[in-house]
Length: 135
Image (cartoon, rainbow, N blue to C red; front, top):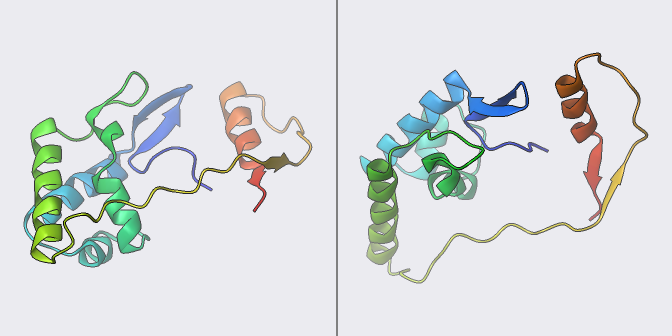
Protein backbone atom coordinates (compact mmCIF):
# COMPACT_ATOMS: atom_id res chain seq x y z
CA UNK A 1 0.00 0.00 0.00
CA UNK A 2 1.41 3.36 -1.04
CA UNK A 3 1.08 6.00 1.65
CA UNK A 4 2.31 9.08 -0.17
CA UNK A 5 0.62 10.35 -3.37
CA UNK A 6 2.09 9.58 -6.78
CA UNK A 7 4.66 12.21 -7.70
CA UNK A 8 6.13 12.62 -4.23
CA UNK A 9 8.63 10.88 -2.01
CA UNK A 10 9.69 11.42 1.58
CA UNK A 11 13.14 12.86 2.14
CA UNK A 12 14.35 13.76 5.65
CA UNK A 13 10.77 13.62 6.90
CA UNK A 14 9.44 16.02 4.26
CA UNK A 15 7.44 15.43 1.09
CA UNK A 16 9.46 16.38 -1.98
CA UNK A 17 8.80 16.00 -5.68
CA UNK A 18 9.93 12.70 -7.15
CA UNK A 19 11.65 13.84 -10.35
CA UNK A 20 10.45 11.04 -12.64
CA UNK A 21 6.94 10.71 -11.24
CA UNK A 22 6.31 14.47 -11.11
CA UNK A 23 7.33 14.78 -14.79
CA UNK A 24 4.98 11.92 -15.69
CA UNK A 25 2.21 13.56 -13.67
CA UNK A 26 2.69 16.85 -15.52
CA UNK A 27 2.49 14.99 -18.84
CA UNK A 28 -0.65 13.15 -17.68
CA UNK A 29 -2.40 16.47 -17.10
CA UNK A 30 -1.28 17.74 -20.51
CA UNK A 31 -2.28 14.53 -22.33
CA UNK A 32 -5.74 14.67 -20.74
CA UNK A 33 -6.29 18.24 -21.92
CA UNK A 34 -5.19 17.15 -25.41
CA UNK A 35 -7.95 14.53 -25.46
CA UNK A 36 -6.17 11.31 -24.53
CA UNK A 37 -8.17 8.73 -22.60
CA UNK A 38 -7.23 7.84 -19.06
CA UNK A 39 -6.10 4.36 -20.14
CA UNK A 40 -4.04 5.78 -23.02
CA UNK A 41 -2.32 8.18 -20.60
CA UNK A 42 -1.47 5.36 -18.20
CA UNK A 43 -0.11 3.26 -21.06
CA UNK A 44 1.96 6.10 -22.59
CA UNK A 45 3.54 7.02 -19.28
CA UNK A 46 3.95 3.51 -17.88
CA UNK A 47 1.81 4.33 -14.84
CA UNK A 48 0.31 1.10 -13.52
CA UNK A 49 -3.21 2.36 -12.79
CA UNK A 50 -6.71 1.65 -13.97
CA UNK A 51 -8.62 4.58 -15.54
CA UNK A 52 -10.32 5.33 -12.22
CA UNK A 53 -6.92 5.53 -10.55
CA UNK A 54 -5.68 7.89 -13.24
CA UNK A 55 -8.75 10.07 -12.73
CA UNK A 56 -8.01 10.14 -9.02
CA UNK A 57 -4.58 11.59 -9.85
CA UNK A 58 -6.10 14.25 -12.08
CA UNK A 59 -8.55 15.50 -9.44
CA UNK A 60 -6.20 15.39 -6.43
CA UNK A 61 -5.91 18.95 -5.10
CA UNK A 62 -2.74 18.11 -3.19
CA UNK A 63 -0.86 18.58 -6.45
CA UNK A 64 -1.61 22.31 -6.17
CA UNK A 65 0.43 22.35 -2.95
CA UNK A 66 -0.40 22.15 0.75
CA UNK A 67 1.43 22.79 3.98
CA UNK A 68 3.08 19.37 3.57
CA UNK A 69 3.10 18.70 -0.19
CA UNK A 70 4.92 21.05 -2.59
CA UNK A 71 3.07 22.17 -5.71
CA UNK A 72 3.56 19.91 -8.73
CA UNK A 73 0.85 21.36 -10.99
CA UNK A 74 -0.15 24.96 -11.68
CA UNK A 75 -3.66 26.04 -10.73
CA UNK A 76 -4.29 26.96 -14.37
CA UNK A 77 -3.40 23.45 -15.61
CA UNK A 78 -5.37 21.82 -12.79
CA UNK A 79 -8.46 23.93 -13.60
CA UNK A 80 -8.15 23.12 -17.32
CA UNK A 81 -8.18 19.39 -16.52
CA UNK A 82 -11.21 19.76 -14.25
CA UNK A 83 -13.07 21.63 -17.01
CA UNK A 84 -12.04 19.02 -19.60
CA UNK A 85 -13.31 16.27 -17.29
CA UNK A 86 -16.68 17.99 -16.81
CA UNK A 87 -16.96 18.50 -20.59
CA UNK A 88 -16.25 14.82 -21.24
CA UNK A 89 -18.84 13.73 -18.70
CA UNK A 90 -21.39 16.06 -20.29
CA UNK A 91 -20.56 14.79 -23.80
CA UNK A 92 -21.06 11.21 -22.65
CA UNK A 93 -24.36 12.21 -21.01
CA UNK A 94 -22.98 11.53 -17.54
CA UNK A 95 -22.94 15.05 -16.07
CA UNK A 96 -23.58 13.79 -12.55
CA UNK A 97 -20.75 11.27 -12.59
CA UNK A 98 -18.16 12.04 -10.00
CA UNK A 99 -15.07 10.36 -8.69
CA UNK A 100 -15.98 7.38 -6.53
CA UNK A 101 -14.67 7.94 -3.05
CA UNK A 102 -12.22 5.42 -1.76
CA UNK A 103 -13.27 3.15 1.05
CA UNK A 104 -12.07 4.45 4.38
CA UNK A 105 -10.54 1.73 6.50
CA UNK A 106 -10.76 2.08 10.25
CA UNK A 107 -9.47 -1.29 11.43
CA UNK A 108 -5.76 -2.05 11.15
CA UNK A 109 -3.25 -4.60 12.33
CA UNK A 110 0.51 -4.46 12.46
CA UNK A 111 3.36 -6.90 12.73
CA UNK A 112 5.74 -6.42 15.67
CA UNK A 113 8.18 -3.57 15.15
CA UNK A 114 11.84 -4.50 14.94
CA UNK A 115 14.62 -1.90 14.87
CA UNK A 116 16.15 -2.53 11.42
CA UNK A 117 17.59 0.84 10.47
CA UNK A 118 19.68 3.45 12.24
CA UNK A 119 18.17 6.33 10.28
CA UNK A 120 14.93 7.29 12.10
CA UNK A 121 13.18 8.39 8.90
CA UNK A 122 14.03 5.18 7.07
CA UNK A 123 12.91 3.23 10.16
CA UNK A 124 9.60 5.13 10.15
CA UNK A 125 9.07 4.29 6.48
CA UNK A 126 9.76 0.64 7.29
CA UNK A 127 7.27 0.73 10.18
CA UNK A 128 4.56 2.14 7.88
CA UNK A 129 4.98 -0.91 5.65
CA UNK A 130 4.00 -3.11 8.58
CA UNK A 131 0.51 -1.58 8.82
CA UNK A 132 -2.16 -3.72 7.14
CA UNK A 133 -5.85 -3.02 6.80
CA UNK A 134 -8.42 -5.54 7.92
CA UNK A 135 -11.04 -6.11 5.23
